[in-house]
Image (cartoon, rainbow, N blue to C red; front, side, top):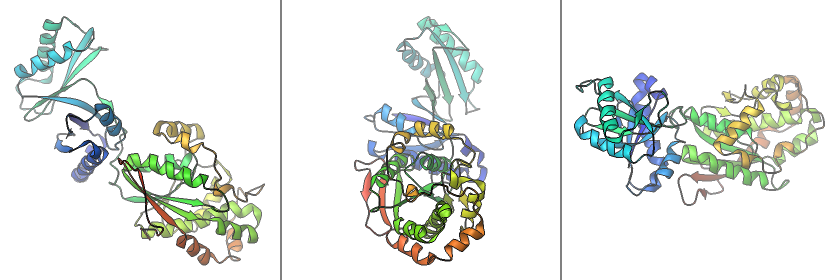
Length: 400
């Protein structure tokens, strides 16, 4: 089986193009590594992927549709660089299709080929029509016979299946994601992967004060998201003690903002040691009390590096639609006991002031709380594809 994979955005990278193409080829091999030996060859503007004959096209199609950097792909058939040799092969393939109309579309990457694209379309189209009697429809054909004329071969195929576009995962560095069990943060993680980032997941939980449902959800979300980056690590940070201390010492309206400031502090420590270049959250301006511009500004004051918010301008319906498309919505909507709902005040501050937050934190041993949370953090690793998609690591965080 040979699949032609085309890219678009990568082609604009100029001096870095070879690196991105190499990364895309590597990810295509990783996405299908359980199907047998996979070989990739870089061609003009595309990658040829050869898989074992026994590989399932349905499986390959599903996997390649999730590989970031892929614009579209096709199940290709190879023919000699000779129109006379190609013609009977194309006619035989068209005869097997139950269609009434067809057309021929040619892309000539090899400009030394003696016939122009238009001439090939006319000659091959006439030959197919003469044998099959099918009608020609250049606007809305039942079947399109695609040809790509390369340096030493011709490929013919009948469909271009869409990929997710973007940049190959791993091409833009690593980020650390504050992953909750909700709808938003998995979508934010997906969007960062689409921009080529490898995402480290960090989840804050309140077990054993609350039950393990949010941990279980986040574990499943990590497993789902690993389908897009092939290897993931989930760090589970105990946050109950931080919350109890805040509740005992700080004004109730400030609790949510203070929770978030501590999460940023802890996540940033992890990010630095994991060599992540930024933190990522699933926040969208104005969606909930902690996500007003005033509160975001106060929360960001504790960060020493960038905090990225890929959903910042999206509304809830847009986020839900994307969650459904990527397959995380059903898991995200399962009931759980999220730590952010613990000790939630009746009227959380929507316009917190920096001096208020700093005054409240003067009553807390910030460094001790951060250190305690880091010491209690555990780690789990995920792989895709794998028979056992989650492989628990030791109780020590491997990135710390």
